[in-house]
Length: 448
View 1 (cartoon, rainbow, N blue to C red):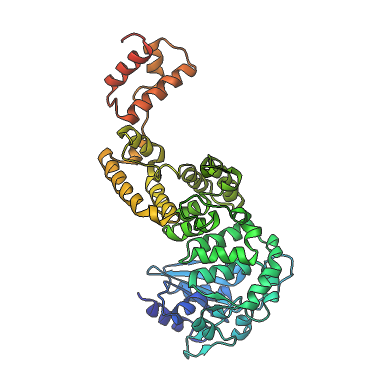
View 2 (cartoon, one colour; view 1 turned 90 degrees about the vertical axis):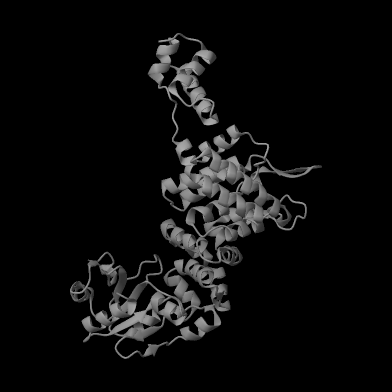
């Protein structure tokens, strides 16, 4: 089934009701972009909508029913159908007092931006655009519906949403919107970190994350969301001193692939440079900024309520972000295996970060780094799978070690096991017999 076929079935199901294509799906249509999901608005109330779509859907969900939204899926396509809304805000929280309406114009008037306040009547194909959203789509402009301060006061999260739409669509922010946001950034305190996180995620994985982050900084939004960025105006080491650490960071985010983990690692990899900055006759230094950076990254991600596993993944990569750029042909095979063991299934992410990091530094170094990186990849292929190395365990267990060496449980047993693991990582032992011989040779003990 195609999108058009699903729309035809929905039009039939709502033949005696109003039904409009709205929101992102209509915006994508007007921009000539493909949209896999549908956003629709109707005068039917949620219970009625659920009954109507149940006849044709493979699955129906009503998680957002109290807000008027019924979701459905048909042949892998998704649609959300929302009853016309005429909400009221209390000015304290971002949660509206939900009220259902009967007029599409009233529904459009409560929306955030003009580019989201357009509707297509699916019965007549008439396009409703009471706030000039089509013109703003043509001009590449994000503009609030009505008075910007009023829209922001209703829901301060709209400030971050404005930035996200600019980053996702490559649009400019309307001047009146920019002024209102700059004057209202303190209202973000009313918004939960979970909601803020979702918008920051969207900005970072957008096609233009650099522009989005720069806009957050220029508007004052970053001061309340990512204040750590504001102190990155430090000289970046390099022969040409072309940019400071902040500009380097923004470029690294732009250069890396649009995956959430990679974009956050690029954003946070140099976050501790202000605390580790020093300079002498040999130049600028940031000693151990990667270690402190991992700690700071953890604090930032915890504040943003990111999942624990995601935090561990990002902080590990921040801590290790200098390993790949420092590779040289003088590295031994043992050093390659050690790198693969320590990074495990994060090896490719570490390589991607290194590529963006070096590219965002002195461009004159980038071509030479590419040569070294190709050599490193060749040597990695010769060793094998990094993930397998990461799962490696000592070939003897603690009980066997105690029996061999006549030891009781204690730190010495751990020392022996770590020795064994190190030898395995370096490739000097590969069988149980070799492991036993290595233990006897290193620690003494008796045979069995």
